[in-house]
Structures are given as structure tokens and as C-alpha cells.
Image 1 (tube, rainbow, N blue to C red):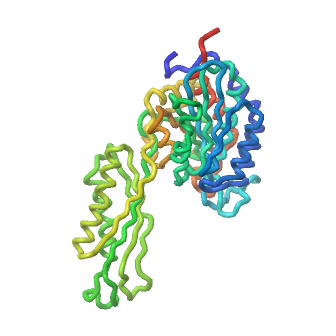
Image 2: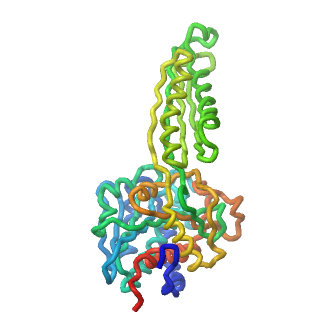
Length: 409
């Protein structure tokens, strides 16, 4: 069997997953009603542990975060595969109108992590039922802190990649989409699939004074505005259009009233890139550009870069394996290759830096909505159809079964 071919013995997997659908929906909606943000998710962790109770798993809890790592050991020896789901919600006030909408003010599962968690629980159940077929181990990684807190890195520090005794030979994760991808479709691609996400905070310092006499002050606002424009010029003139970067200034603050020149202007930047080479260049050149502009105006400047998540890169063999597994399990018309990466970022990139991995998308846009006009992930109006849970669980389980199935009897 090659990595690009799904195992032929897993007929009935979707039917088994369909039997789990009601309890997966119940778990997803319970998670949705009580979202938690960041690394400390005690209610979410308790729900996951309750869903795993009684299964033949070795369970470890995180020390610095509310993670759950569960190891399933197959009936025969073999390699290890990792399946991951993220647990955390976003600081968004839900306006979806769902009967099971968030009951926590200012918090919402607006990115579908509740579906990821329930789907991975389903995969655990399916694989436990098929333990005798497994020649190797499966590590189930339930991770807090994907939305910017770096939970994957902390779980790696706490041993998730050696939880089964040896590093995984492959890792897989799915992400649902509230729009763009039609309901039930699977999409992935080889190579970069999600961008690196970094940030920069720039403080331009001048000398305050009266708005009527700018020549007696050192006005930081025009210099900061020029620096913002120079960053956009840098993007179009220093970077290959086929290896792009995105530089967006989302926050700009200076002054208090119109007739007072402030001492300083501060702006914040998000920086996205799609290759390690472009990332390294932009993180070096963006501060140099703002320093040059500020110095040309006689200003002092501080440009602080904070590195976030790296580029999420799919191993080509693993991406091909996901594509073929999706076609065989769900049907040829349910898979599409993504033509380009997505400019969002993903903590799974850190796993991909250590393990040959594949990250793939599952369309969860309600079937009565146009996926090209529906509210996107992170929107307070985002809707995710939990009818896709069974297929998501089955596909995750299939990926592990295909890698770990023993010889034909």
C-alpha cells in the first residue's frame, strides 16, 4: 500500500460514524454553549474527558494548559500516528441566533473548534472499536490555545510527540469552514496551506508642540503615516508576486486633540507570508523600512517584531494520502485541491515542523446557504452545520487506519 492509496478494508466506517452522530452533535452543542478562551479551559477539558471515559486509552493532562493527550495502542506493534483537534474559542459576542448559542458573554466558538473536538472524539471511538486492526499507536491531541496563545508548542514541550514512546510518522488535522467550501467537501493541497502570522509594533517618537506651529515641534504623525505607505510599497517592490507577503496596519494611535502635536505615534502591523524565505526577509526588512523613514524625518523609532506561527506546510505525500482517502471514503465529487494557500495562520504549523503532516479543510456551511456569501469563520454570525461531524470523524479515523492497518489475514 502506498501513502496515496486508502486501505480497502475499511468499508462500513461511515456507517459506524453515522451511528455516533447524535452523541457527537450533543457534545458539539454542549461545547458551543460553554466556550472558553486561551490555555485554561477546565469546562472543555472535563467534557472531553467525560466523552473518553471507559475507552482503552492512556490519558495525560497538561500542566501549563488544559490539554488532553490520549494514546490508543493497537493490537499489533507498529508506528505512531497523531490526530489533532483544537479546543479554544474566540473573544466574539455571538449573534447567530442558534438555540444552542453561547451562554458566555463575549465568547464564541466562531472558528468551529467545537466541531473539531467532537469530530476527534468520534475518531477516537471509531478507532477504539477497530483496535484489533491497528498495527501501531494513535496519539489524540486535544489542544487549547490555538487562537494565538501557542498551545501546540507548549504541548510539544510537555511531551505530546513522545506520548506513545516514539515520535509520530505522520500527523493530521482538519478545519471546518463556515463558508467558501461547499457543505461536506474536503480540500487540501501539497506545500504551504496556511500563512505564517507575525506582528510588529512601531513607535515613532518626535517632540510635541502647538498645532499652529509645527516648525517648533517634531511631528511624528506624518512620519508614521509615511512609514505605513512605505511598508505597502515594500510589499509590491521587494517581494515576488508568486511568493507574496501581506502587510496590514490595523491599529494607528496618536494624539488627543486636533491642535496639539503629540510626542509619539504608534501603529500595529500584522505580517503574513507563505514561505520560510519570504518570512525571514519581511521580518528583517519591515523594521528597516520604518527606521529609514523615521530617521529621514529626524525621529527616533522603535520597531518590535513578535514572531507568531510559522507557515503551515503540508508534506506532499501526506496531502496526496488525504486526498485519496477522502475520495475513496466520501466519493470522488467530495474532494477538491485548493489552488492556493489561505492567508490565515494555524498552530498546527508547529506540529508540521516536527512531523510529516497534512492539514485539510471540511466544508460546514449549512446546505441552505450560499458558501460564497455566508458569514466567514471568526464572524459573530458564523454558522457551522454539525451534520458534517460523522464524515469528519470517519475521515480522521480512516487516515489512521490506512497508515496502521496490519497485513491481510
